[in-house]
Length: 250
Image (cartoon, rainbow, N blue to C red; front, side, top):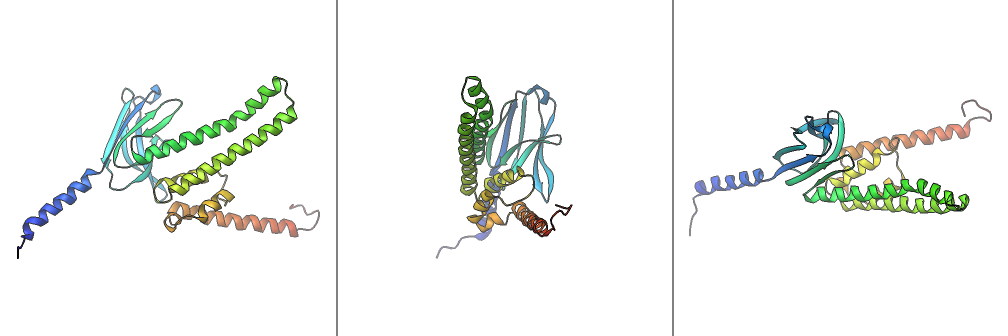
């Protein structure tokens, strides 16, 4: 029987582990056409324990900046200038190309960043179509169309676009339940609400969500607050319904 000398093999295996863990690195190559950013310092920050913690930083010199470091795990971070959050970035293995202009912010070059910014671009395009409806109504009326008919037509068009956008957001989150994009976009959706509350869209998303998604700390906190708010709203409604007619508290 052939016997192998473990004392020779062990250092080799440790070396392989070392190489594999060190090989996963992120490299951000950024360019900016915004002249006011020149000389400014940009920060990558991650939300940890309810606080924004700096992960990396770089100075913008002649419109260029770069950052690099280990990518032992995939995580969502935000690019900051001072205390202003500029854009989300997925910190993952590979070269991430960040572009900043007055009209657009993009991070591309790696799998999840490509997916994230394709989603953002499409959602923004749908949002622009919805915003354009008011201007479209004014133009059509100025061209002599009947105001009531135009308004009815564009209300229907707006409802269709909102439904399409909501369905797109929901499907994106569902398709990414098990990576950082799902929880992150879910929290972006929740941040557009005036306060934590369960909407039909959010209830729909949670109905099919796997346990890992539901156990995300930010999502757990949101759901807990949404439940509390629902109870407060229901209690307030009961008080109004039971109040005597003419009660000044109504």
